[in-house]
Length: 319
Length: 289
Picture 1 (cartoon, rainbow over the protein chains, first blue to last red):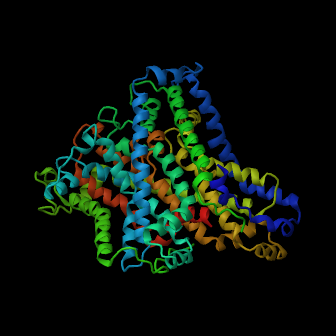
Picture 2 (cartoon, helix red, strand yellow; picture 1 turned 180 degrees about the vertical axis):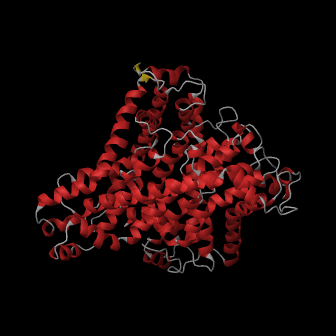
Picture 3 (spheres, rainbow over the protein chains, first blue to last red; picture 1 turned 60 degrees about the vertical axis):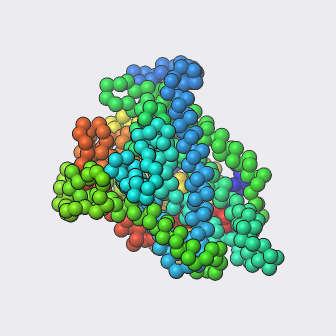
């Protein structure tokens, strides 16, 4: 946990200690006035919901009458009787397993591609980043139509090339890969962070490797990967936690279908907590699902942090 | 790292032809869907479902760019989105700058504690707050108003901004504060008249990220806004093509309007590309060096 966040926490404000100490009392008052909004925000939007949500997870609550304490009843129902919960977990896991490795590999490959010296490399970089800039709803709805089996762009192109087409979002087996395909169109976001990391790798390392007779492949494995390993780890954590919370794409593209094939945990939480008119909201039950998701996210971060010390190249020597 | 100097390293891993072939492929993957969207926007309603589909419209229906937005209630949604986004950008940047200033440049008890709490809350998934906050807003009459989308920004709602602001403030020499203090300036004057001008790149980057976050936000307005007259573009656009609307959506109207929806972030991107890339790159570069 500490290892990968270490650089975040580098304290170089220390030198102000003596020079800014004139009237520490007035500094304290001023400082608390400056951060008062953030403290209020932290209390109301982080502290309160965290506690309240944990309590609600242990209750039966429809949002109208007072919550009724049921202990671990919600969790028992989740893991034993609810027919939709395991499929939701499986769909979420499937999405993460498909999306995260592909996003990292394609993102890194694209970054390495854009890190070379060619005319026009800026254009490729700009275009790759373009989908990230566009509003999520706009791109998702566009892809909903691209993936339309009858008149969509993807099948039109595949047909003209004589390649097999697919039902994409309408097929239970292809729906999730289609969602992931759409998400990968935004790989530019991963690319840009990798690109910044690649450009911070000291050039001398490559030159030294070249002198020693290393080819591009072994330079990649022995220099690039170890040097950017802290960023790879950061990306694994960021991408996994984000993928676990995917909502917009399945909500707009498939609304969970066909069947339960793309009914990820976030969608299930949303549908239980904020159902269509006429159905009773199950806010306690949805809170229990939120906590399952939350615990999975914490586990991912903890696990990643534990692995950090094993394989990332440590550049955390004080500078 | 302020820019990404691509020319710095003369290293080539693959041959020129292979590079350009790949570059062309990548460019096509990124741009063709958008071009196709424009052609759909220009087709007449029935031509969209023509089989086999034509890549270019037979007749160019420019009127879709007028009729489409009207059918979707675009002017109203645009106004709503503009107000919500403008206020949350203002709030998010202002609070982050104030908090970052205090955390980086003032000495006070609890400084480290609050820094760790703010930055630590970055790890908290947003969904944890969804249900308790929904109930809270409902009980104080904020449900179906814009307040849940705006007020949190004024209260440090984005911890990443606080982190970025603090990093930036740490890099400014302390002799500047000293000089201002000798001239008799208080904290408020140092902050507004000395620090804000010096930290322009930081708050422009934040403003862009905040704009993007608010303009793109879908889940929050979907949960907190009930009346269609108050919806921002994200919810209104998605509702137009949702099957719940009862009838088959008019895709050519939709795609024409979708282009208009994309325009503001697109223009901002090309006008301030440096800051966009800096914003995301800063996440990587701060962890590295």
